[in-house]
Length: 280
Image 1 (cartoon, rainbow, N blue to C red):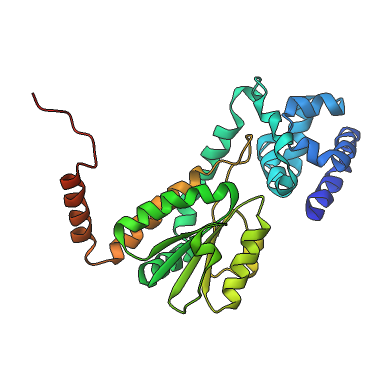
Image 2: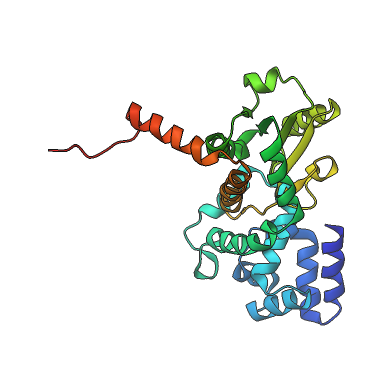
């Protein structure tokens, strides 16, 4: 936040208009994180073109790039009632901000998937005797999907969320890998549980949203994948893709995965798990 503020003041020296914008930003950054460029122009008494020029002078591609970065800086301070701003019917600049964020996040995935952190996590999940997926509050809703997918290709997948048996009675073993789902607003109960497990000698990895995440201090590896915040609740399209990708990569490391999937399919067919059109 300090670096962000310093950059604003540096640009303010360029002109009287920029100084006018900077003075408003310096005391209203949190409010601006919810604004469209038209909103900010109205509040500062300048044109939208001036707002765009100010943002590009800061080094951003435009106002959209600026406000997304600002949101990433301040979003852990947002509370649910404040997010009702995203329920308004008029969409900034004629497009859904959540859709634009998700598209931008997906465009980052090729580089993320080639990272060393992803390769490490795939290797750990493929080799660990026991893999515990741990999370709390809204981001833990990703875990059942991850557990279902990974549970199809290997045994030993467990889910630990507050109040579950795996959470309340967790017993650390050297063969265990914990993957923490550490996303804003970063539940304290999750961070404390993961740190306690790590102190007990368990390998703790994390999937988190940015390099400033609290998970970076103790997770190894820590895989950074962006989430979108331009809505009433955070959206997890990129992390959901990552789960699917991770499952595919782990499956490639398991020699008997085809036989395993064939056995599961045979069982499902025998039990009539899936609906089929009746024959007449």
